[in-house]
Image (tube, rainbow, N blue to C red; front, side, top):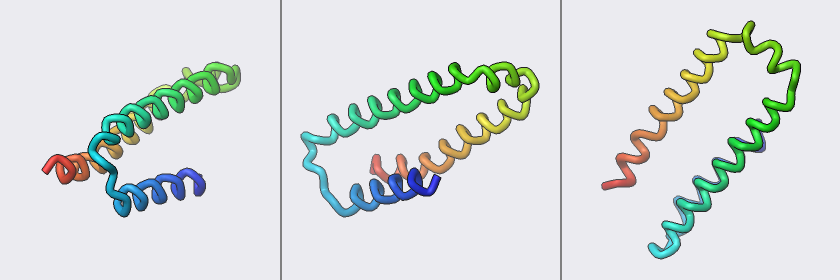
Length: 88
């Protein structure tokens, strides 16, 4: 977890310090979207390949849904002000 947090913070620091030429920005967006798709796909493969987790899904039920919804809501609430600031 610490490695993930460090990678995100390093990316934010580099993004703030390095001015990207405008022609590269669309490529960065595409690269980020592709990386996210690969990450989500690999997580799905990992979850789908874990029979113990799949068998316990009915027991997790509501708790897992609440945690997932909270994570999505927290991400949206954290990203919203940053996106508003970027679009100005």
